[in-house]
Length: 88
Image 1 (cartoon, rainbow, N blue to C red):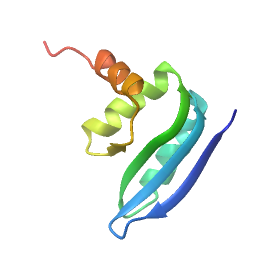
Image 2 (image 1 turned 90 degrees about the horizontal axis):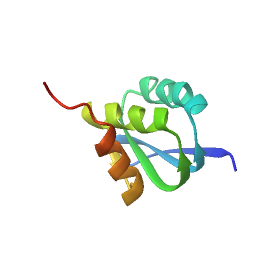
Image 3 (image 1 turned 90 degrees about the vertical axis):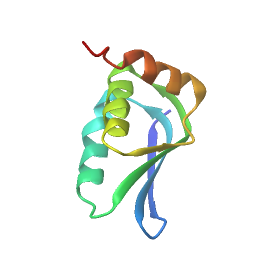
Image 4 (image 1 turned 180 degrees about the horizontal axis):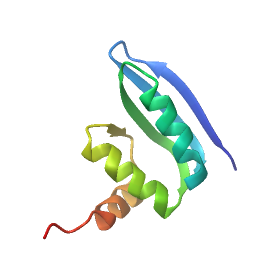
């Protein structure tokens, strides 16, 4: 299973539809696509089946900086919440 990235736009946002297996080696590619756009990015995770810890941390940072995580499965959402650092 590989990662497939489909890019689109809803007129105001860059929409990256991800499907398959999202792993740490894909993080730099996603960052480049997000940073290379003038539009704010939305990550559509509806078809993501497997992820690793580094990706979970990346998604948490993205969300903290205003990126919408669309169609995020409950297990990914729960994992993101568990990985958030506890404020001191």
